[in-house]
Image (cartoon, rainbow, N blue to C red):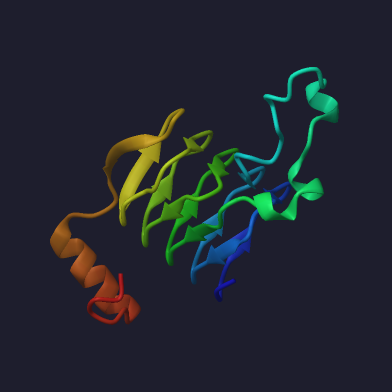
Length: 136
């Protein structure tokens, strides 16, 4: 966990991983595994199927959230995802794959809908934040 991180009310974090510096995670965000429950066990009700707690070797892949990221209200981030530095995840988005640095993503599944800054603005932003060159 980085420094200066805000995690909103009612969030659920059920995976290993890392959260960078200056991150804002809105209320009711879920950061959860995608393989936690065995849903294809023939003859077993899903309620009683194997789950990750019974099989630690099946632990979900970690989530990595870069510095200066904003994850909006009610978003869901699935295990194994990398959210790049400076990215924004819209409220209610379902993030199933990696998010490039400074991309703005929305929807289900989340897809890029824009960029937070233009290239020259990113350079200035990172310089002002004291980010080392090549430290993306």
